[in-house]
Image (cartoon, rainbow, N blue to C red; front, top):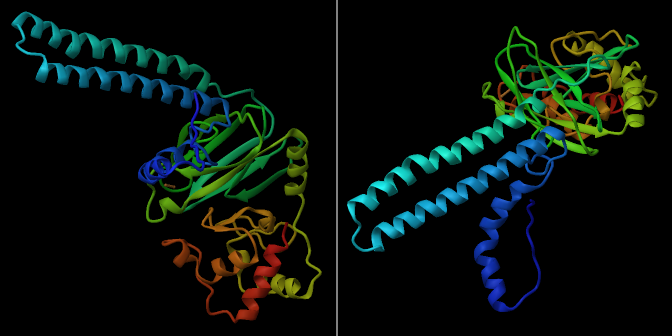
Length: 339
Ligand code: CUA
């Protein structure tokens, strides 16, 4: 079971073949690997989904071959007696689909109990809330610490971890194809979804339920780390924001409060305690800005602050393009320094 593409130098005939089939083959096989592929499983549940997918593909291939064979036989097989035709219809039209679909259904259902296992209770409580159009992620540790971040989920490898999944507005769905199945995020309800990563790495998650204008720009990163790195990360995230010492960033920190950013955003350790938008206490360490619309970093922060709606139509954050370039640079330098 697996998926791969091959390349290499060959004779002219090979190159022609590659030229003909290379594009479509790449398009098809491109879905077999990468940080957002359900077939490149990095989680226990994703392995089960991938296994079922290969069984379905095998079943579909067998049925397709039989149907094609029957069609060829019907056209070329010469005169067909009524009795033989009746048996073909009953066998191919009733018995075969019943057997094939029953086997596939039974196999699919047999995988479900393990996937519905919520994992052990206790441990760090993680709540993910779907917003328009980003992910509010809250961690509460056993020793009573809690913090929020956005558009990034950090999980320990090898442990089945519960996510408590909610929505602040409309129905969203959380899906990290490499790690497991989907779960709906429904207003007024908390669903529990467990993920059990089997290897470390950075995987991409998406919103899998149409939720409005920027549904397709609502992604996040799931970062899987070992236990030691997970504990260190929890400690770092629970700490208050770094106080800038570099002049440009200090000016940015003052501007952040003067411009009213704190009405919507929290930076723990400062006066900014807004709850409408993402918590920015450690925004400088995040892999993306705007729910994976931009890579992390000062340049992205600056673009986002000036033109959020151009990057994400319908985004609730007001634009600040009217700020002088120096001010935008100062704000970006401050936020980028919040690691
Ligand atoms: Cu959120 Cu689609």
